Length: 70
Image 1 (tube, helix red, strand yellow):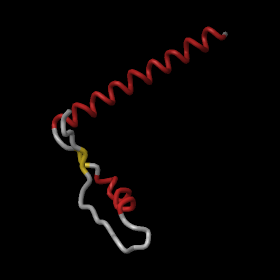
Image 2 (image 1 turned 180 degrees about the horizontal axis):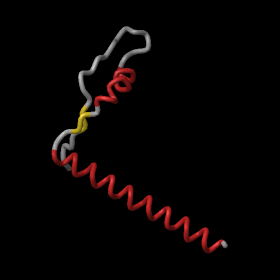
Image 3 (image 1 turned 60 degrees about the horizontal axis):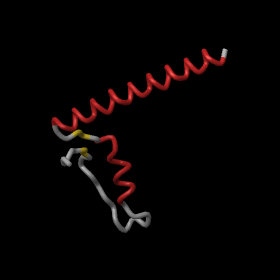
């Protein structure tokens, strides 16, 4: 019983590891071809950069992720 549970958990952990490696590989490939637009992040970045007292309000047209190299 315990052997089967451990074997199942090892398969799950291995599958997650392979899945993460594939996702990271795709992200690295996509970044190497050019910048990635992250427009859905605009409200979060604006909130983080704006002041709480409304003295400074930041508006961002687009948020992009780019690879600058090593």
